[in-house]
Length: 448
Image 1 (cartoon, rainbow, N blue to C red):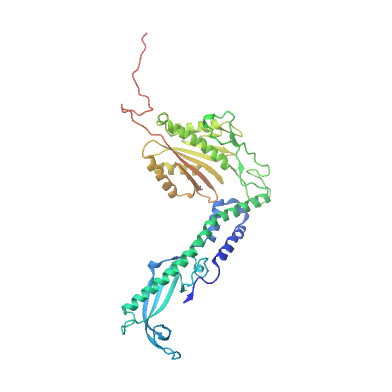
Image 2 (cartoon, rainbow, N blue to C red):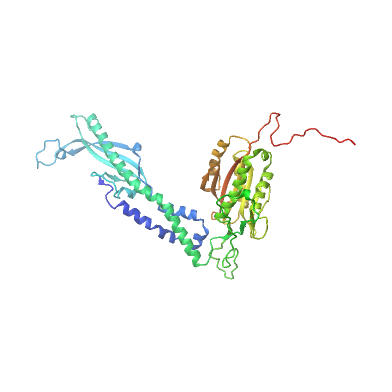
């Protein structure tokens, strides 16, 4: 058996690997760098550079004991004269095979924490072989049947496994620190290189959609501490559909998109209106999807204006709220009355039917009339995770989730979806009529 965890410093090896992140990012072709979502690039580089920590699978160990012999002159409790030469006695050859998971080379790297005793073994195909000899202890019993020897063998295996697990744990602590810092390091390198490439070619990552607060925006829908952003005028050097006489495809074509700040502003208006509706549910509980959509549409158009028309938010279809610019949808809103998980998946399907640009934004607004609100909100993350086109979760807050979906036919295109829920319960009055709905009453006829 050879000593383990003795070759190179694990700290130095991980440090070199961290510094190699920039080299990995530099190898990405420029066109792919600009057209692929940043998080996808981050995931790819992280997957190539992450280090799987060691996991010793103690419970899956196997032990093989076979008869053999050993030199008694090496034993401290045997009376062998110096220089007498080897004196062989019956013994049991013990081979403990312990499977492990993780990066094989970690078994050779020195850990920052260590003891005076190093684990020893032989590594063979994701298995650590621990080999030892145990002499017979109770007389003339055949090797492998001596109970005292068997007990000594068991103690020997447990002792070596515990030492091995300690070193694996110390190694794992260093590896986990490296793995935890890796995504942030990769993301910084990707963002920095994208910025350098865009600057060198005088391009923009995306073009801002002209969207600003109306001068006559209702005060009741404003959010404290938030200042509306002025319209963003796209640079002349980067049109949305540049023309070229060259037969070579352009490096990168920027597209219009709502900025993150504009998207946050839109969601704040929807959130404020939804919470206002929750405070007076009797006024809205009987409205259908189209009417609820109209309420949100009015609030959004009363708050924002676009560069060309007063009504930036338009409707198309049964329950859609759209922001269209340059002939494409840059924001899609879906309003649904909750009737089970299918309500959410149907809304997500509709969102994907409308988005066509590289970085679209969307909102799915769910109105809950019946059911346990707590149970419904608890089930929504599960529905989102299991949805066919879900890529990753971006953010989560009380009653609201932010997820990234991929386009049905193009992985380089994705949509950020905010899922928001509002509780508008339908209550029953003492007369059995739903509150919020007028009763027919008696008809009054005037007499001449």
